[in-house]
Image (tube, rainbow, N blue to C red; front, side):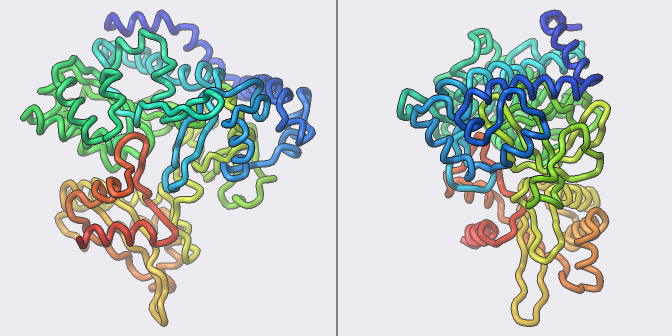
Amino acid sequence: MSLSNSILTAIYSKRLKAIDRFRRQPWDVQFEQFRLLVGYGAKTEYFKRHGFGEFGTVEDFQRRIPVVGYDELRPEIDRVRAGEENILWPGKVRWFAKSSGTTGDRSKYIPITRESLEQCHFRGGKDVMTVFAYNNPRSKAFDGKTLTLGGSHRLDTMGAGAQSGDLSAILIHNAPKWVGLMREPSMGIALIPDFEQKVEAICRRCSRQRITSFAGVPSWNLVLMNRMLEYTGEDNLLDVWPDLSLFIHGGVSFTPYREQYKKLIPTSQMKYMETYNASEGFFALQDNLSTQDMLLMLDYGIFYEFLPLKDLHEPARAVTLADVETGVNYAMIISTNGGLWRYMIGDTVEFTSLAPYKIRITGRTKSYINAFGEEVIIDNAERAIAAACAATGAKVKEYTAAPIFMKGRAKGGHQWFVEFDAPPSDVMLFAEMLDKTLQEVNSDYAAKRFRNTTLMAPQLVVARKGAFYRWMRSREKLGGQNKVPRLANDRRYIDELLAINAG
């Protein structure tokens, strides 16, 4: 066991016991979180307005407190931003994580309380280190520094003394000093607002540092890593950082990028650990790197509910952990120590295990194609892309898909706009495998495709190199937590991309 891992395991042994407890007694721990949360909530105007008190039951909570999205909660959040106290959480909220979400253009301001910082976001980061160090005692992942490519680290002052910015900025400004000794880049570089300038500065500084791990969104880190190789003239990242051994990733599926990272870091010693965290909270982490599912973290000040995706417009059908099933797509609903009450975060998940509770992210409640009743979700798309790549030797850099709407007597279909790092050996075979796999994993899609009843075969458009990057830059969405929308039920994004591709 490396010295750093020995120290981490010793320091966080108490956390390992706590994690083991919620593995064995999940509902006991969740009910404790519920009681703690409603104790805080009972002091707020929001609870008083809905007639819910400190000693109410879970069932009463579900009857009285409505399921909401950001738009429904926005009036209360705007009041909190203006400095009003005891609206959604006791006292005054000083920080707000600014997020546009995956596909929206309007900014959201997610309240970040001291409790959510300490008990959720920081605890999640520590648990990533703890769990990895315990499971990989010989790894050198924490012997050097962690390179973190987050969003803009600038905080903007709002009214009443509050500050807003990317979650990464709020975390860095509130983190203990020892965290700064373990991470790169420096604060000065992290504060650079322009993504391309930031990447150049990171290359100049970090090519000379001992980087043993890195963290962030796979797509944007891939841009940084490729630029690092251009800057140094090396063939792979091990020539730059010989002890590189861990990538902590999240935000988008890692599946389309896995082979590209293996090429950049050609060693079996490299580990990839997925986390599920967002501005709204830290939810899950991959505790077993041999599987693709993640352990749901149950003692972070979050009470979970799950609404079957088929019942998306019937919130009364939401269930607690006690009643979830494996193999069902659920929209996730959270009540948090950040003052979000029965908040539908917009992600969909599927349980792969109930003892302990493990999940995988399947998509977004607003990111799908269902123009013809086919109900294609991101999980379907990821599986189809992976199968098409395996059949043709392709490596996909980015992709998005949208419906082709019926015109006159013409039938509908799907259009896939795909940018390759390595092109397929046979473009037609790639499209055929995409279609075939979608039919295998989605019976609704298969029914619509049967004998071209409703849907014609998908149309594949091969993007020019850099098309997605140019599109994101035109929208001022480079870097950080900005993500390419994989699926859309209209043609807004794909038509913009097609126009850029033709330019």
